[in-house]
Length: 238
Image 1 (cartoon, rainbow, N blue to C red):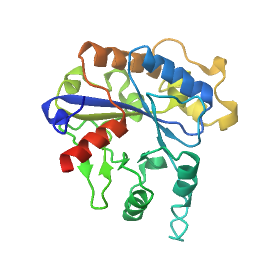
Image 2: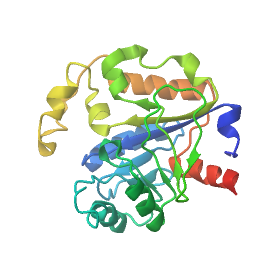
Image 3: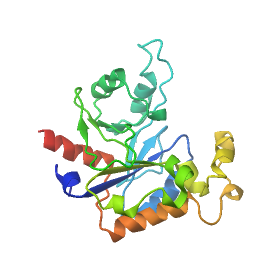
């Protein structure tokens, strides 16, 4: 069980996924992989997924488009909140952060946001914000894999104290994308992705992901949903 000092005493990981209109088959694919290791993930959802089940968490992943008409800026958040009323967390597309959003998250009754990129920084902890929500900074982005390949994460960093929120995209994992193939996949319309012939063989990001799961298990590093981490942080503030 997490305590308010867990991330000061050792590493605490959270495996998160920005769904970006992926089909249910990709959500199911990742759930099965996590469950095989006894782990739960947080899925930041662009829509409601009937396949998503406990102990995995459904959070919001809206795309805020209109920043000229402030009365309409948060409409995508509100629409998605109605579709997934059980969600307590949020991460906007493109890691959007602003004061209007933080106020809107609190007014919507959400508990946390997870969008600050603090890649590979030691000692990350949940940050209580002035509006009452908790920010869970992102420790690792899958774009690091395109830049560094198998060296995108040093196992020694995983052993250091701190919160380690990992951000993956199902579209990359399902296709086992590589630095050479992911751009071609992303250039396709959503409806034309997720075809078996587009799945890369050999070492790709899915291979990296499986190694990460093995490392978390071997090092006995706690792996929690963002909701559970935010609740523990709230307990610290109380």
